[in-house]
Image (cartoon, rainbow, N blue to C red):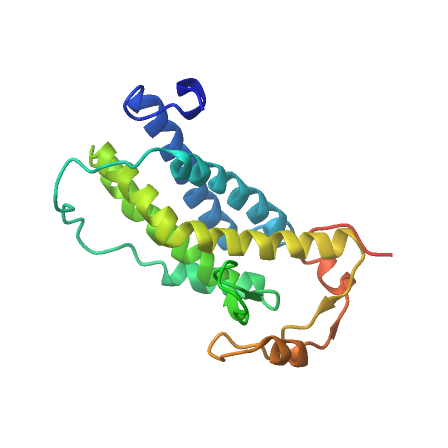
Length: 219
C-alpha cells in the first residue's frame, strides 16, 4: 500500500488527522440530528449512509500502523459526555425495529446470537468517538488518533459493524419485498439461543415498516 493511499501520520499527519476527525465529527453531528426526530421517514436510510461512511474512517485507522500516544498516561478529560438522552431518542425513533440479533465474534465457533439494540450501538459509538474528539479539540492530535484506532479495534468498530448489518438488513427487506420477523418481545436482557430467537419471531410484513422508514411502498 502506497503512502498516498494510506496517508500515514508519519508522512503527512495534518491531512490524515483532519480527514479522520472530519468524518468522525460529521458522524456525531448527523446521528444527533437524526435523533431529534424531525425527519423520521428517512432515519434508517440516513443512518445506513452515516454508519457506512464512519466505517471507512475506521478501515483507514485499522489498516494504519500502530499509532503511539505522545504521553505515557492519557490526560484527564474530565467527565465523559452523557449519551443517555441520545440513546433514548434513538430508541423511541427506531421502535419497533430497534432490536436485532448479532453474533459478536464470527471466528468463535457455534456462538449463539444475542439481542442488541441499534440505539445502544449508535450511542456507544458516539461516546467512544467523542472521547477521542475531546483530545483532538484540545490539540492532542496523536492522542486522538491513538484513541480512535485503539477503540476501533476494541469496541466501536465491531459495534458499528453490527449496527450497519442491522440497518442494511432493514433496507434490504423492504427493497426486496421480503417479510420481516417480528422482534416485539425480544429483550436485550435475555440470554437467547438461536432457537429461542426463532421462537420469538412473529408476523410483521415489510410493508408495515416501509412508510416509517421512508422507503417505497411494497406492492
